[in-house]
Image (cartoon, rainbow, N blue to C red; front, side, top):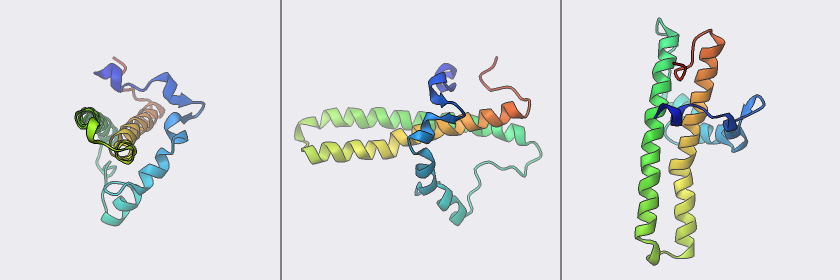
Length: 135
């Protein structure tokens, strides 16, 4: 599975990622449960930088992004399977609504985890550490 989770070359464009062009920063800001605004309001800390070893915390969070992404992949597959099971009973509006809902609930969270992983790896490399994918 490491080969899937490892950031790909096509995900980068110059100094940015393709996810930035797809609006991931806006999505990340307004995500209802763990978005930037919600985390600030509810005082949620995802990466505990006050711990003694910040680098270990980054490696831990990078693994957690894989877990979150895998959950959304399973959700995406389930959503698509459900879509085909009830296909004959759906109106045009239902199809559009379910597609947009799947985009919001599963596809963008997958993009967000990949974007976070790229950022974590960049910090690790800038601090002279190796990527979790370098063996």
